[in-house]
Image (cartoon, rainbow, N blue to C red; front, top):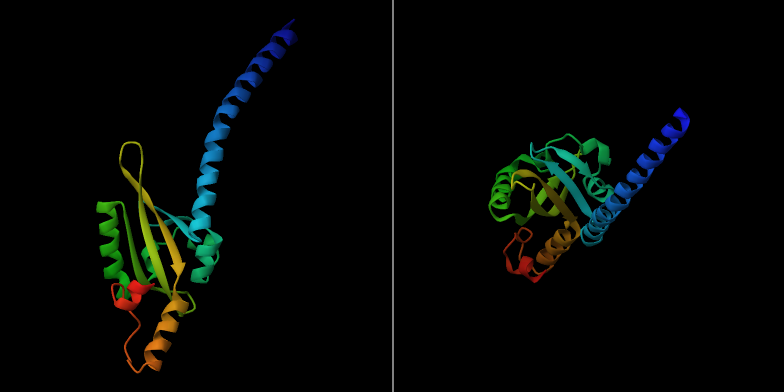
Length: 173
């Protein structure tokens, strides 16, 4: 008799669990599809916690910086830029906190000492209570465009530095 009672309780719990999982599946599918959409639009994606450390990065983000994804987790996100870029990056971060999103071109640094030009987008994330919980850092490698621009400047005899954001050549992109 006890076994029948126990079997009934297990059956009821199994049915309840299946119903909960069925309700959760669409939410998981929606989150998955949003992540896939973001990665199709922007290849280098990282999650940065509110404390300023990387929570996660995708393979493309890490490859752009010349590291493995797990090497970035726990590191401070702004350290992917050389010290001379820190002021610009902090200003962009402040703008993101006010506006919710910002974008800038900045020089990034790799562990091997090489540099990479990055188009960086910062997107603030807030919880249901409108508390800042972190941000997404989206990067795109623009090194090739900057190299071509430098070659063009050299060939035309302009002898200038590569275009900075806001210059006519940067606007033409």
